[in-house]
Length: 145
Length: 414
Ligand SMILES: Cc1ncc(COP(=O)(O)O)c(C=O)c1O
Image (cartoon, rainbow over all chains, first blue to last red; front, side):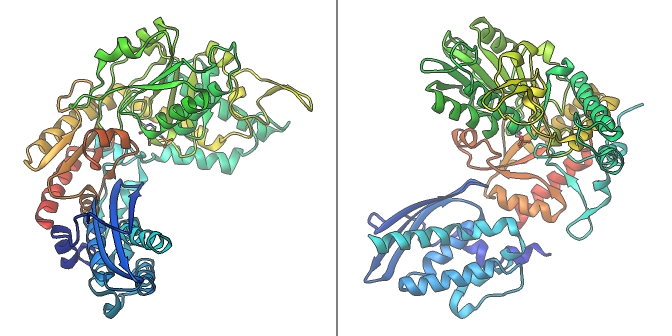
């Protein structure tokens, strides 16, 4: 196994220059998620208008995988309806659980396909999912608000 | 005979395998769990192959052999820590040992010296592993006692100046780690033990990171309870030790109840067997305890002082080499006084999880994260660190492999 399959250039770019890493002053839902096995933490704000996600902002500490993953998700899922976001998120979870057997549909997942290599490192899957689970949680809260 | 870690490694079959496409295994994670020598593996396997039966039960030869081997292991462990045989209780782990003491105290009725209530205090430290924090925190919550703690100084030592304010007439328990699994700090005990005993409190020592690495004698330390895990002591998983002074074990109520721990039973009442049986309900983890007996035999044959000296020299070497790298910050004492072989560090610009992954690609096993001491790492302002922990089978070439690995990671993640 080559480490470069895990640390794609795209991931390291997102890690060094994360998108939307500044909490918005207003939001429809705010969540705080922790990965208890490694100590990574994220606070995430989500705003939606008429069932469409209009902003995802976040702050947190974590490894390159967790930080890049939330950066990618916070970009990809904006402009999507809650249903679309959920479908994309399900695709991503499936990719992460594929044990290296899937490459991911770039038309759906865009930059997130760069995280495909994570699926070969079981200990890192939780890192990649931290932000996505936070978005899922925030989406549910925003919809029930 | 001079001590040579390369020779020692030959006793541990795992070092014949390779890691990540043919790389030499550089195992720097013994703080999490130690590798096992062949003699320990054999002891466990032989028990199952040749002697398996329920110890203390059954009127047959196998039961007799199983009992002899199990009790023999107890005697070995007792000798290893300077205890009386009946003071050694086998548990499944240090975590269970510490929970045993805490839950048993929680079962103590009014009038029992271990009974806790509002106004009583339990003292821990900020450098505790979750296993020696949460049982006390929760015992306090259940009984109304107050949890207090020693702070940790920026260089990773206990703040002993707090003794008079922390250990008072209200103190019932002082539960402390002997050696921090994160910082490597070895806590000086004599002053704390004296203060605790002066107010009638008991001292519970989490010796998970000391018993495997240096001579620990419960009588010399003058403590009251001690816990350690077999698997960190080159022994099997699934076995731990809870040692307690015999007079205290007599007064301490049981934690788990069931078979083999009773003196007499009716439908509505039961009385307890004397220790250690009182604290070992059910058919015990015989194969694992016997494996632990083989483990302490193995360590004793080399000599705990020899092992401690070897680790001391290695730690000094690794600390100096790490501190030579500008981007590295060591979290824990930088000088070798009262310091063991767990070295936590951060590398500027690289998250520990990424560093650990990179080192793994080089065949180097380290631990990353908060090391089950989250309140400590948070208080030190480092959410996560990378930890290298050294043991008898590590050598200077392992240190050098780590240093090379850290430098390569710095280039990789630049
Ligand atoms: C200082 C310390 N205390 C307690 C424990 C708990 O040991 P175990 O997980 O074997 O029960 C550990 C190991 O993880 C430790 O390092």
